[in-house]
Length: 194
Image 1 (cartoon, one colour):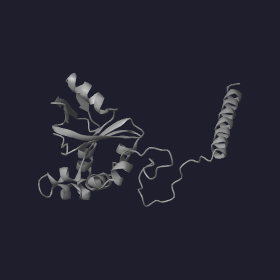
Image 2: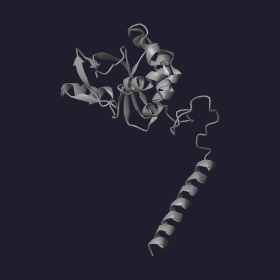
Image 3: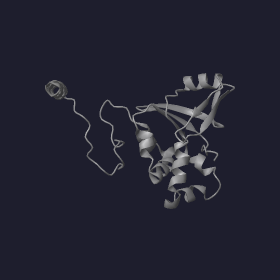
Image 4: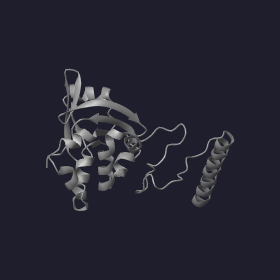
């Protein structure tokens, strides 16, 4: 009896999905198909193309802006693309190229070496909070004196100083809504304390 019920439920679900796909095709809507592998290749997540009417995820946005070339290169070298394209919600504190330039000379080059992949990954996931933190929420967290839990397992202090939101000691310069959460542009690399 259970098998018959499961079979009926399965067939019903299949027919609903098929009907929905037919309706989308009638309206001229199609699911996004990836036609170029050159954009990015990594485990599972589709960080490659935005279909019409879809909002870009964090990695797509970073790749489209010249201020984040160092960050994108670091993300790819560390193999942490999934951390910034998962469905979220997540919040990424994205350092601009100039932030990486502020690090001691040779730091970026050293971190990009294959033997330092794990260390680089740790630094990068310290910029990702597995939660939804628009500016309004960051202000609330600062007012309550809370710290933000980061994907690295570390915590960052969030403060409101003279109307400026400071996270991990660096100011949030700009915020961008993406399909899987928020990108907050920062002018410093958030190097975790070990």
